[in-house]
Length: 395
Figure (spheres, rainbow, N blue to C red):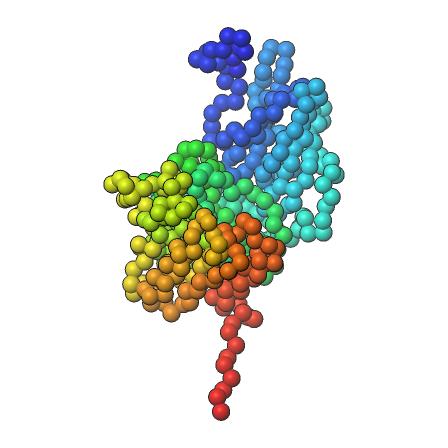
C-alpha cells in the first residue's frame, strides 16, 4: 500500500505477503479487501480487514469445500462478498460471506440438479514427487471409500502449457467412468499456472521436459499408492498437451497400458511452419537458433519414437478442419507408432471430417468422441462388454 498522490513503491507497505499462492484478483468491500488466490490449483479467498489503525492481517475465508473460486463480487458500500465456488465433485454454487457471523452460506441463486452433488464420489489433492524433487499437485477423483488395491481403470490427464491452470470443475459425465470403478486424475504439471509464472517458465522452451517428467511422476504415484496398476493406467493429453502425452509414452512406454492423444502437437520440429506455428514460438521455441532447435526436438514425440519398442495402445484424434494443430501432426505420429511398435497393441487414428480443434464441436460430436475414447480404454483394460466379438466360423 502506498499513497495515491505521492506513490513510493520502494516504501510501500506489504498487504499480502509473498508465498506459494498466486494472487488472481482483488475485490474491495466496505469492511475489507478480498483477495482471490490460487494455491497449487486450489482456489482460496483471503480477507484483509480494514481497521482504525489501517489494514489488518490477511485471514482465510472459511469455504465449505476446496475447489475453484470462479467469481467474486462486492460493493464498497456494503460488507461481505458474493462468490462462486465449484469443485471436482460439486457443481457451481453462488455463496455469500457474512462478516458478522464469519460464515459462508449458499444463496440458493443457483438451482441444484439431481446429479450436481454426488455423495458417493470424493476427491483428494496430493503431491507427487517429480524426478528432481519438485512436488507436483495431483487431483484424484474416485468413488468414496475406494479400495487401494491397484484394480481401478485410471485416466491421468495433463496439459502444462501457456501458464494455463487446470482449475477444479464439476463435469457429470465423469460419473459414468467412476461408477464403473474408475479413477480420474489431473496432473498439475510445470508449464501450467498453478503456482504462477515461475511454474509456467519451469515448463517452457528448454525447461519443457519438466512437463512430461512431472506427468510421469504422477502416473508413478497412482501406481505406487495402488489406485491402479500399469495394466489399467491410461494417459491423456490434447492440443499443446499432446507434447505431454506424446513424450510421456515415448519416454516411459512401460508405464501406460493405453493413451489418448487429442488433436495433439506431435512434430514440434516442424510446427512453426504450420499456419498456427509462429504465435507458438515464444512458448516452445524455433528451429532458427541452436537452443531453439534443441528445445523443440526434445519435446517432439515423433522424433523420439524408436523402432522395436513395446508402446502402449494409442488412440489419436484429429479434426480435418483443425486450424490450430493441423491434422498431419497426429496422422504422422500414428503412422510412426504403427511402424515402430512391437507390443501388438493397436495404434488408431480417428478423423472427424466435420470437426476442427474441438472448440466448435456439437454436443453429438463431443459425445461420440467420448464414447469412442472410453470404449477404447475399457477394451484395452480388458473390461467385460468392451472386448471384440469372436468372428463367426467359416463353413
